[in-house]
Length: 340
Image (spheres, rainbow, N blue to C red):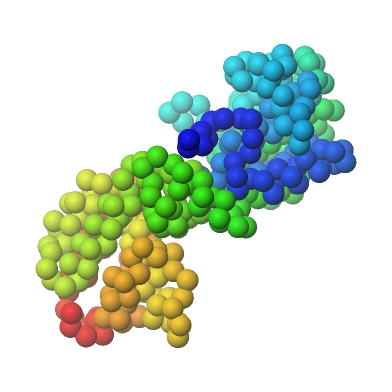
Protein backbone atom coordinates (compact mmCIF):
# COMPACT_ATOMS: atom_id res chain seq x y z
CA UNK A 1 0.00 0.00 0.00
CA UNK A 2 1.31 3.47 -0.87
CA UNK A 3 2.34 5.79 1.91
CA UNK A 4 -0.17 8.43 2.94
CA UNK A 5 1.66 11.77 3.33
CA UNK A 6 -1.01 12.97 5.78
CA UNK A 7 -0.36 10.24 8.33
CA UNK A 8 1.27 11.63 11.44
CA UNK A 9 2.45 8.50 13.22
CA UNK A 10 5.94 8.36 11.70
CA UNK A 11 8.43 10.53 9.81
CA UNK A 12 8.63 10.18 6.06
CA UNK A 13 11.50 7.87 5.04
CA UNK A 14 13.87 10.68 4.03
CA UNK A 15 13.18 12.53 7.31
CA UNK A 16 14.78 9.85 9.46
CA UNK A 17 18.14 11.57 10.03
CA UNK A 18 16.58 14.93 10.90
CA UNK A 19 14.05 13.31 13.18
CA UNK A 20 16.83 11.49 15.01
CA UNK A 21 18.64 14.80 15.46
CA UNK A 22 15.52 16.42 16.90
CA UNK A 23 15.03 13.47 19.25
CA UNK A 24 18.60 13.83 20.50
CA UNK A 25 18.05 17.53 21.15
CA UNK A 26 14.89 16.76 23.08
CA UNK A 27 16.49 14.02 25.15
CA UNK A 28 19.36 16.32 26.14
CA UNK A 29 17.01 19.26 26.78
CA UNK A 30 18.66 21.28 23.99
CA UNK A 31 15.73 21.65 21.62
CA UNK A 32 15.73 25.35 20.66
CA UNK A 33 12.76 27.57 21.31
CA UNK A 34 12.98 28.80 17.70
CA UNK A 35 13.59 26.39 14.84
CA UNK A 36 13.94 27.36 11.17
CA UNK A 37 12.96 24.33 9.11
CA UNK A 38 14.27 24.59 5.54
CA UNK A 39 14.20 22.49 2.40
CA UNK A 40 13.06 22.57 -1.21
CA UNK A 41 9.39 22.50 -2.13
CA UNK A 42 7.89 19.06 -1.71
CA UNK A 43 10.40 17.91 0.91
CA UNK A 44 7.62 17.55 3.47
CA UNK A 45 8.51 20.42 5.79
CA UNK A 46 4.90 20.91 6.88
CA UNK A 47 4.53 17.19 7.56
CA UNK A 48 7.73 17.19 9.66
CA UNK A 49 6.71 20.32 11.58
CA UNK A 50 3.22 18.99 12.32
CA UNK A 51 4.67 15.71 13.54
CA UNK A 52 7.12 17.58 15.78
CA UNK A 53 4.34 19.78 17.17
CA UNK A 54 2.24 16.67 17.75
CA UNK A 55 5.11 15.01 19.63
CA UNK A 56 5.87 18.09 21.71
CA UNK A 57 2.26 18.35 22.86
CA UNK A 58 1.76 14.62 23.50
CA UNK A 59 1.17 13.74 27.17
CA UNK A 60 2.63 10.23 26.94
CA UNK A 61 5.26 10.10 24.15
CA UNK A 62 6.06 6.69 22.70
CA UNK A 63 9.45 5.34 21.64
CA UNK A 64 11.68 7.64 19.56
CA UNK A 65 9.74 10.60 20.98
CA UNK A 66 6.78 9.78 18.74
CA UNK A 67 3.29 10.93 19.79
CA UNK A 68 1.24 8.16 21.35
CA UNK A 69 -1.81 9.02 19.24
CA UNK A 70 -4.28 8.14 21.99
CA UNK A 71 -3.92 10.69 24.80
CA UNK A 72 -6.26 13.66 25.15
CA UNK A 73 -3.65 16.02 23.67
CA UNK A 74 -3.02 13.78 20.65
CA UNK A 75 -6.73 13.50 19.91
CA UNK A 76 -7.07 17.29 19.97
CA UNK A 77 -4.03 17.70 17.72
CA UNK A 78 -5.39 15.18 15.24
CA UNK A 79 -8.72 16.99 15.22
CA UNK A 80 -7.00 20.33 14.61
CA UNK A 81 -8.45 21.83 17.80
CA UNK A 82 -5.54 21.72 20.25
CA UNK A 83 -5.63 24.96 22.26
CA UNK A 84 -1.83 25.00 22.65
CA UNK A 85 -1.08 24.79 18.92
CA UNK A 86 -1.26 27.88 16.72
CA UNK A 87 -0.72 27.87 12.95
CA UNK A 88 0.10 31.06 11.07
CA UNK A 89 -0.15 31.25 7.27
CA UNK A 90 -1.20 33.87 4.72
CA UNK A 91 -4.90 34.61 4.92
CA UNK A 92 -7.19 33.36 2.18
CA UNK A 93 -6.53 35.10 -1.15
CA UNK A 94 -3.45 36.78 0.37
CA UNK A 95 0.22 36.13 -0.32
CA UNK A 96 1.77 37.63 2.81
CA UNK A 97 1.73 37.17 6.58
CA UNK A 98 0.95 40.55 8.12
CA UNK A 99 1.64 42.22 11.46
CA UNK A 100 -1.86 41.53 12.78
CA UNK A 101 -1.25 37.80 12.43
CA UNK A 102 2.00 38.12 14.38
CA UNK A 103 0.21 40.09 17.09
CA UNK A 104 -2.28 37.22 17.28
CA UNK A 105 0.66 34.91 18.02
CA UNK A 106 1.69 37.25 20.83
CA UNK A 107 -1.77 37.07 22.37
CA UNK A 108 -1.73 33.27 22.03
CA UNK A 109 1.59 33.06 23.87
CA UNK A 110 0.31 35.18 26.74
CA UNK A 111 -2.24 32.49 27.62
CA UNK A 112 -1.35 29.68 29.99
CA UNK A 113 -0.75 26.28 28.41
CA UNK A 114 -3.64 23.87 28.96
CA UNK A 115 -2.02 20.44 29.18
CA UNK A 116 1.72 19.68 28.96
CA UNK A 117 3.01 23.15 29.78
CA UNK A 118 4.16 23.59 26.18
CA UNK A 119 2.83 25.79 23.40
CA UNK A 120 3.79 25.41 19.74
CA UNK A 121 3.54 27.94 16.91
CA UNK A 122 3.98 26.96 13.25
CA UNK A 123 4.66 29.80 10.77
CA UNK A 124 4.46 28.66 7.16
CA UNK A 125 5.81 29.95 4.88
CA UNK A 126 7.88 32.21 7.11
CA UNK A 127 9.48 33.95 4.12
CA UNK A 128 6.05 35.40 3.30
CA UNK A 129 6.11 37.66 6.36
CA UNK A 130 6.26 41.32 5.37
CA UNK A 131 8.86 43.52 7.07
CA UNK A 132 6.50 44.70 9.81
CA UNK A 133 5.51 41.13 10.62
CA UNK A 134 9.14 39.97 10.71
CA UNK A 135 10.08 42.83 13.01
CA UNK A 136 7.08 42.04 15.22
CA UNK A 137 8.27 38.46 15.58
CA UNK A 138 11.74 39.47 16.75
CA UNK A 139 10.78 40.14 20.37
CA UNK A 140 9.13 36.72 20.63
CA UNK A 141 12.28 35.14 19.22
CA UNK A 142 14.51 37.05 21.63
CA UNK A 143 12.43 36.61 24.80
CA UNK A 144 10.09 33.63 24.37
CA UNK A 145 7.96 32.53 27.31
CA UNK A 146 8.97 29.26 28.97
CA UNK A 147 7.74 26.14 27.23
CA UNK A 148 7.19 27.87 23.87
CA UNK A 149 8.45 26.44 20.57
CA UNK A 150 8.33 28.62 17.45
CA UNK A 151 8.80 26.60 14.25
CA UNK A 152 9.35 28.63 11.08
CA UNK A 153 9.12 26.84 7.73
CA UNK A 154 10.71 28.14 4.54
CA UNK A 155 12.03 26.94 1.20
CA UNK A 156 13.60 30.40 0.72
CA UNK A 157 15.34 31.12 4.03
CA UNK A 158 17.54 33.77 2.40
CA UNK A 159 14.36 35.84 1.91
CA UNK A 160 13.99 36.13 5.69
CA UNK A 161 15.66 39.10 7.43
CA UNK A 162 19.06 38.21 8.87
CA UNK A 163 17.79 39.30 12.30
CA UNK A 164 15.16 36.55 12.18
CA UNK A 165 17.50 33.87 10.81
CA UNK A 166 20.14 34.60 13.45
CA UNK A 167 17.66 33.98 16.27
CA UNK A 168 16.63 30.54 15.03
CA UNK A 169 18.45 27.24 14.92
CA UNK A 170 18.38 26.00 11.35
CA UNK A 171 17.36 22.46 10.44
CA UNK A 172 17.50 21.54 6.75
CA UNK A 173 15.55 18.65 5.28
CA UNK A 174 17.62 17.32 2.41
CA UNK A 175 18.11 14.07 0.50
CA UNK A 176 21.53 13.05 1.77
CA UNK A 177 20.70 9.61 0.39
CA UNK A 178 18.03 9.66 -2.37
CA UNK A 179 17.27 5.94 -2.13
CA UNK A 180 14.53 6.17 0.57
CA UNK A 181 12.77 8.87 -1.46
CA UNK A 182 13.10 6.89 -4.70
CA UNK A 183 11.77 3.73 -3.03
CA UNK A 184 8.84 5.73 -1.62
CA UNK A 185 8.07 7.27 -5.01
CA UNK A 186 8.17 3.89 -6.76
CA UNK A 187 5.40 2.70 -4.41
CA UNK A 188 3.06 5.58 -5.23
CA UNK A 189 0.03 4.90 -7.45
CA UNK A 190 0.66 5.48 -11.14
CA UNK A 191 4.46 5.73 -10.87
CA UNK A 192 6.64 3.10 -12.51
CA UNK A 193 9.99 2.37 -10.78
CA UNK A 194 11.97 3.73 -13.74
CA UNK A 195 10.05 7.01 -13.52
CA UNK A 196 11.04 7.74 -9.91
CA UNK A 197 14.47 9.24 -10.63
CA UNK A 198 13.33 11.54 -13.49
CA UNK A 199 10.39 12.72 -11.42
CA UNK A 200 12.60 13.48 -8.42
CA UNK A 201 14.98 15.44 -10.64
CA UNK A 202 12.07 17.31 -12.21
CA UNK A 203 10.83 18.26 -8.73
CA UNK A 204 14.33 19.49 -7.77
CA UNK A 205 14.63 16.83 -5.09
CA UNK A 206 11.21 17.19 -3.44
CA UNK A 207 9.59 13.73 -3.23
CA UNK A 208 6.09 14.99 -2.43
CA UNK A 209 6.33 17.47 -5.30
CA UNK A 210 7.49 14.64 -7.55
CA UNK A 211 4.44 12.55 -6.64
CA UNK A 212 2.20 15.51 -7.39
CA UNK A 213 3.85 16.05 -10.77
CA UNK A 214 3.29 12.41 -11.61
CA UNK A 215 -0.39 12.67 -10.70
CA UNK A 216 -0.72 15.66 -13.03
CA UNK A 217 0.98 13.86 -15.93
CA UNK A 218 3.89 16.30 -16.06
CA UNK A 219 6.54 13.71 -16.94
CA UNK A 220 4.87 12.69 -20.20
CA UNK A 221 4.01 16.29 -21.05
CA UNK A 222 7.59 17.39 -20.50
CA UNK A 223 8.90 14.72 -22.87
CA UNK A 224 6.46 15.96 -25.51
CA UNK A 225 7.63 19.55 -24.98
CA UNK A 226 11.29 18.59 -25.36
CA UNK A 227 10.48 16.87 -28.64
CA UNK A 228 8.59 20.00 -29.73
CA UNK A 229 11.65 22.11 -28.93
CA UNK A 230 13.78 19.82 -31.09
CA UNK A 231 11.16 20.07 -33.83
CA UNK A 232 11.44 23.88 -33.78
CA UNK A 233 15.23 23.69 -33.92
CA UNK A 234 14.97 21.46 -37.00
CA UNK A 235 12.38 23.77 -38.56
CA UNK A 236 9.83 20.98 -38.53
CA UNK A 237 7.39 22.76 -36.18
CA UNK A 238 6.02 26.28 -36.05
CA UNK A 239 7.29 28.06 -32.88
CA UNK A 240 4.09 30.11 -32.70
CA UNK A 241 1.95 26.97 -32.60
CA UNK A 242 4.26 25.38 -30.02
CA UNK A 243 4.05 28.53 -27.90
CA UNK A 244 0.27 28.20 -27.97
CA UNK A 245 0.55 24.54 -26.90
CA UNK A 246 2.87 25.42 -24.02
CA UNK A 247 0.58 28.23 -22.91
CA UNK A 248 -2.34 25.80 -22.62
CA UNK A 249 -0.23 23.70 -20.28
CA UNK A 250 1.59 26.23 -18.05
CA UNK A 251 3.71 29.13 -19.29
CA UNK A 252 5.83 29.44 -16.14
CA UNK A 253 6.51 25.70 -15.84
CA UNK A 254 7.39 25.58 -19.55
CA UNK A 255 9.95 28.36 -19.14
CA UNK A 256 11.49 26.75 -16.07
CA UNK A 257 11.83 23.44 -17.89
CA UNK A 258 13.39 25.14 -20.91
CA UNK A 259 15.80 26.89 -18.56
CA UNK A 260 16.80 23.53 -17.07
CA UNK A 261 17.31 21.99 -20.52
CA UNK A 262 19.56 24.86 -21.54
CA UNK A 263 21.70 24.45 -18.43
CA UNK A 264 22.11 20.76 -19.19
CA UNK A 265 23.10 21.53 -22.80
CA UNK A 266 25.76 23.92 -21.53
CA UNK A 267 27.01 21.28 -19.10
CA UNK A 268 27.20 18.74 -21.90
CA UNK A 269 29.28 21.12 -24.03
CA UNK A 270 31.65 22.00 -21.19
CA UNK A 271 32.36 18.49 -19.88
CA UNK A 272 34.94 16.08 -21.26
CA UNK A 273 33.00 13.24 -19.67
CA UNK A 274 29.20 12.90 -19.48
CA UNK A 275 28.24 15.21 -16.61
CA UNK A 276 25.51 14.82 -14.02
CA UNK A 277 22.51 16.46 -15.64
CA UNK A 278 19.28 17.65 -14.09
CA UNK A 279 17.12 16.07 -16.81
CA UNK A 280 18.40 12.51 -17.30
CA UNK A 281 15.17 11.42 -18.98
CA UNK A 282 15.92 13.77 -21.90
CA UNK A 283 19.66 13.11 -22.14
CA UNK A 284 19.68 11.78 -25.72
CA UNK A 285 17.73 14.73 -27.12
CA UNK A 286 19.70 17.25 -25.07
CA UNK A 287 23.00 15.74 -26.23
CA UNK A 288 21.98 16.08 -29.87
CA UNK A 289 20.86 19.67 -29.44
CA UNK A 290 23.97 20.53 -27.45
CA UNK A 291 26.21 19.28 -30.23
CA UNK A 292 24.33 21.38 -32.80
CA UNK A 293 24.22 24.76 -31.02
CA UNK A 294 26.94 27.21 -30.04
CA UNK A 295 27.68 27.87 -26.38
CA UNK A 296 27.36 31.70 -26.50
CA UNK A 297 23.97 31.37 -28.19
CA UNK A 298 22.79 29.03 -25.40
CA UNK A 299 23.82 31.59 -22.78
CA UNK A 300 21.90 34.26 -24.67
CA UNK A 301 18.79 32.10 -24.49
CA UNK A 302 19.28 31.67 -20.75
CA UNK A 303 19.20 35.45 -20.37
CA UNK A 304 16.12 35.62 -22.58
CA UNK A 305 14.27 33.10 -20.38
CA UNK A 306 15.28 34.87 -17.18
CA UNK A 307 13.85 38.11 -18.57
CA UNK A 308 10.65 36.35 -19.65
CA UNK A 309 10.17 34.86 -16.18
CA UNK A 310 10.57 38.31 -14.60
CA UNK A 311 8.03 39.79 -16.99
CA UNK A 312 5.65 36.91 -16.37
CA UNK A 313 5.32 38.06 -12.76
CA UNK A 314 3.65 41.21 -14.06
CA UNK A 315 0.87 41.92 -16.56
CA UNK A 316 2.85 40.80 -19.62
CA UNK A 317 1.18 38.66 -22.30
CA UNK A 318 2.32 35.10 -21.58
CA UNK A 319 1.86 33.85 -25.15
CA UNK A 320 3.96 36.68 -26.58
CA UNK A 321 6.70 35.91 -24.06
CA UNK A 322 6.71 32.25 -25.05
CA UNK A 323 6.81 33.19 -28.73
CA UNK A 324 9.78 35.51 -28.17
CA UNK A 325 11.61 32.74 -26.33
CA UNK A 326 10.92 30.06 -28.95
CA UNK A 327 11.33 32.04 -32.19
CA UNK A 328 15.17 32.17 -32.02
CA UNK A 329 15.25 28.36 -32.06
CA UNK A 330 13.81 28.42 -35.57
CA UNK A 331 16.19 31.06 -36.94
CA UNK A 332 19.24 30.29 -39.06
CA UNK A 333 21.46 33.29 -38.52
CA UNK A 334 24.75 31.72 -37.54
CA UNK A 335 23.75 30.79 -34.00
CA UNK A 336 24.12 27.11 -34.75
CA UNK A 337 27.28 25.12 -34.76
CA UNK A 338 25.96 23.54 -37.93
CA UNK A 339 22.71 23.41 -39.85
CA UNK A 340 20.33 20.87 -38.36
